[in-house]
Length: 82
Image 1 (cartoon, rainbow, N blue to C red):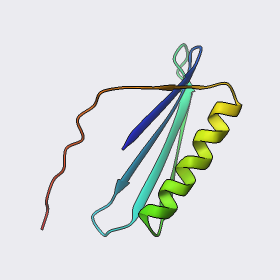
Image 2 (tube, helix red, strand yellow; image 1 turned 60 degrees about the vertical axis):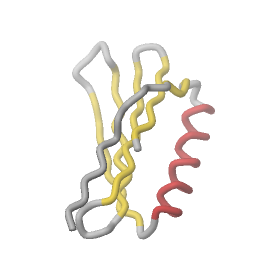
Image 3 (cartoon, rainbow, N blue to C red; image 1 turned 45 degrees about the vertical axis):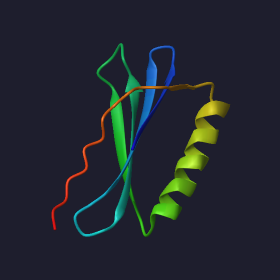
């Protein structure tokens, strides 16, 4: 899952995915489109429910900071590695 927010030239992107050992990873990246400055952080979560809870908290914080949710039609590929 990929969720994007924008405020002027600033962006904030969250990616939620499950790694190969079954942990849920929530990656946050943010920066400014007009500069080379950007940051990223990764949080390992024990369950999908915990990851979604954190995503709801992040969404609320972004709205409070004046960011707008950006809809994008993206195809999420599902691979079966079993």
